[in-house]
Amino acid sequence: MHIEPGLVDGAKIVLSYGTAAAAGATALWHARETIRESGVASLALRSVAAGVLTFIFFEVLPHFAVGVSEVHLILGSTLFLLLGAGPSAIGLALGLLVQGMFFAPTDLPQFGMNMTTLLAPMFVMMVVAKRLIAPGTAYVDLAYAQVLQLSLVYQGGIVAWVAFWAFYGQGFAATTSVATFGLAYMTVVLLEPIVDLAVLAVAKTLRGQTPAALVSPRLYAAA
Image (tube, rainbow, N blue to C red; front, side):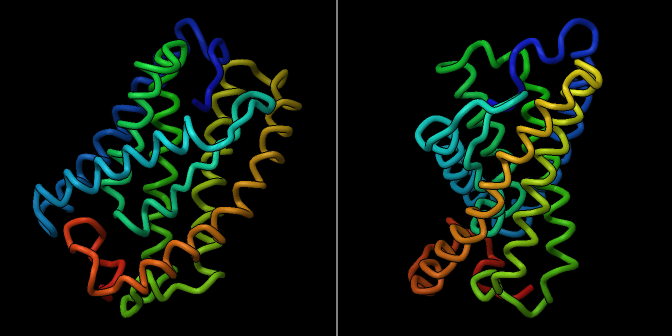
């Protein structure tokens, strides 16, 4: 999905197993928190929803190869705001796995790198959100500046991890390709906050009509 085959190979790829294990463990910790907060059924429903949306982001929405990777409209902050960190992380991993198993088997060796690239920025964004968003603010009431900062954190994290894997695998020979990819990815940074605000506006109109099990409690209720 993000890391092209051959960018990191040989013994170096072992590092991705460790980073993916750490990301997976963090996702499970957040999943446990979701269960404590909303129950197992809510976690399952929201994780499946995130997985379906992730697959759509990967395979249905426009995407194109640029530099060392591909540019996708992966709406990480949208998933986080609607579904929460735990379900979003699980859904991102599931969508990535389904894509690799059934549509892009050449991506499977890079699964650990791609999983890390998608999940690690999600957890950083969650930490930033806690500092950026006042406890008395529901997500549907966020301002554009707040949504933009969340998008910058998530998408910037993706670019940073792609750059790390590229330099780790290819050294400074990857500099031009990494720069090209980073510049192209700025289009996603510009689009994502607009999508987020549109989705949150729709969610706001559905306040009181959306089943609580399908969304993050923070979407409508202040912490």
